Amino acid sequence: MLAHRLGEYARRRDVLVLALPSGGVPIAEAVGRTLQLPFDVFLVRQLGVPGQEELAFGAIASGGVQMLNSGIVEAHGLTGPAIAEVAQREKRELARCERVYRGSRPLPALRGRTVILVDDGIAKAAGVCAALIALRHLGVATLVVAAPVIDPETHAALQGAVDRIFAVLIPGDFSRVDDWYEDFTPTTDEAAGVLLGGSPVFS
Image (cartoon, rainbow, N blue to C red):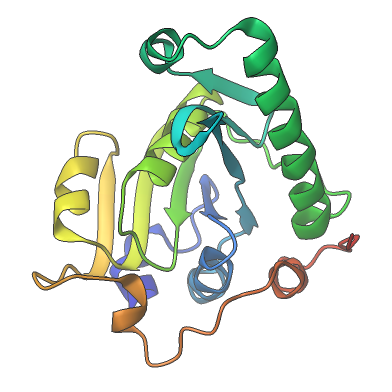
């Protein structure tokens, strides 16, 4: 159903489908296969304030992108060494995930392309917004967000951050993404790596 809504992008040579792991990978694979578009994965790791890891002071992403929120950095008195320690830890995890999902394949060329960023559902905007900022930094020309189900408040919040947004459902009684699936079995890193068609190295 999501691929049907994205039908205008089918077989376009400038379009690439990127999944947010790991749940977005099987959705992106189905969209790519249906629309005859290449698909890959885009990885983002948020940088959490020490002791308050749920509060992100920045993010790193595929393609060597690192972003910092100067307001949060200053408000929490984060020093250069503290930022570097968190960033290095998350870079190691990002590198591990890159090996699992992509094997030895490099990140596809993104500059000037239309990217459809896909997830299995979007409850909050934070992770998606970090990916969108990173993709803009990498020179993506047109950003499209697509998911089977999106929280209505998040859908509204994303409107100004993307060129277009597609969903199968934007339910007024949204609570959790998995409420809208008959089967929400988690997608493992290994299964995602197989779907991506690389030669993943599991660690």
